Image 1 (cartoon, rainbow, N blue to C red):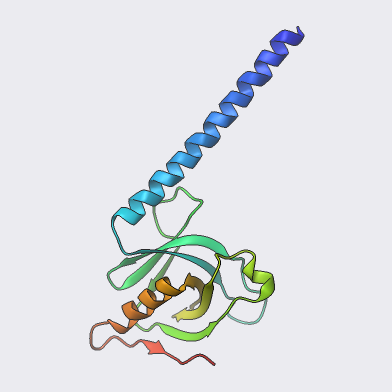
Image 2 (image 1 turned 45 degrees about the horizontal axis):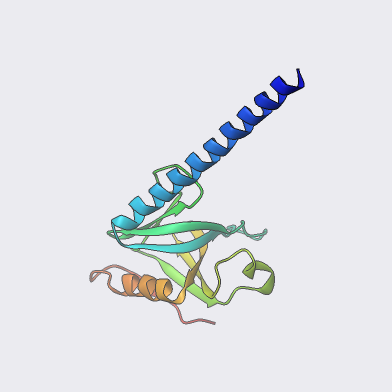
Length: 154
């Protein structure tokens, strides 16, 4: 009886390991497919409340430039549609800062944080130096007549 129980427990453990491996592989393939198209950057995002309150939690993601919008996808997710879409038209970049010591542990190393407002949506994006330079170049490369507001850091 104990031998059959051990075999059942071993089978369940093997299935769990297999499922975890399949999840890992599928996320890696998804990430590679995003990167294959070009125009992708690693960036964390958190939403800021409209009026007071605590900001949301930082979420690791991949930003993908698609025309005049930045599509942001969470890394640990299977959804193909973006979680956030940040439009270049009318975008306001209002602040740039380094992470606070308590939030730096949850972010990639050597990132800068920018506050971005797109209509009613206000978020912070945490990006490395190269990704931030690319983001700002993307904003500045907007066609004539696109209102983009890049305010200097305070």
